[in-house]
Amino acid sequence: MPKKIYIHCDGGFGNRFNSLVVGLLIAEKGGFDPVILWPSTNWCRSTFNTIFKNEYEVIEQDLSYFKKAEDYLFLSHGQFTISAPVKHPSSFGSLNELMDYIRIEGSDKDNIVYNHDAIPKYAYGEGGSLQKIVKSLEFTEGITNRTEVFLQHYNEEFSGIHLRNTDFYGPDKPKYDELEQMVKDNPDTHYFICSDDQELEERFTAHANAFAFPKNKYVEKLTDDGHWRATIEGPDGEEYAFNIERSDESVIEAMVDLLVLSKSTIIPTSESTFLKTAQLIQDSNAR
Image 1 (cartoon, rainbow, N blue to C red):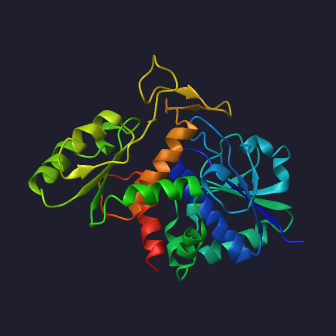
Image 2: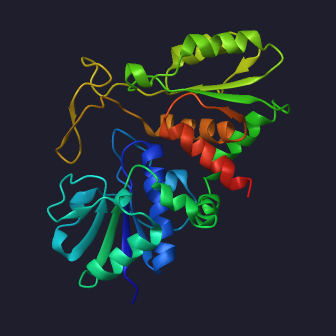
């Protein structure tokens, strides 16, 4: 019986997506059976099966699922509530080195746990295997149908601008004034605007050559009396500086934004994982 690799996907969607695709890559490389841990939290209320059609074994729990941590080999970017030793996935120089570590250190372990909110550089150097996995992930019809209907109104090529705001620190925020000036200076270019901030989105779409997918829900604060990076207690009892609430509806509508953005000429605006996920989807579909 093959070992299982439990792929823990937590945080916002981009973070979860990163953990998911690399975990699936390791499963494919090692012949492991993938099991996806996808808890519904304030960072992402949508469940795995609300977003994806793929039929994987899914457990809607967080790391507290692992009661006997000593039975598992943990590859994680943080210690969190894990009582066993962890090895950071980015500490390896290649995927082969990681697989050797699993083979040697995990020889007496029943299963593996993978959890990393970023994609290690070595994962891109596997002859397109990562991109094949990304391409194999199918979004649900509720997401793809809305994307297709929306794009029927925009047959011409367009550029995509993602404006991450809310919980982003000041230095990490895109330079909104410069980006808006670019939209003004290029009236013949069509710009798709997507943001987690309704007011910012409306500021840009006030220009005739800019448009956005009409959303009903945006990111909200988990506690109204705090700022976006106020410290809150997470579902695992740990403290996090992310005072955000992403409802199921807001996540699903953000998935439409993601797919539309992936079909645009993407303008790099920040280090947002959402933006990087759109780029990865675009690159994978082009293969």
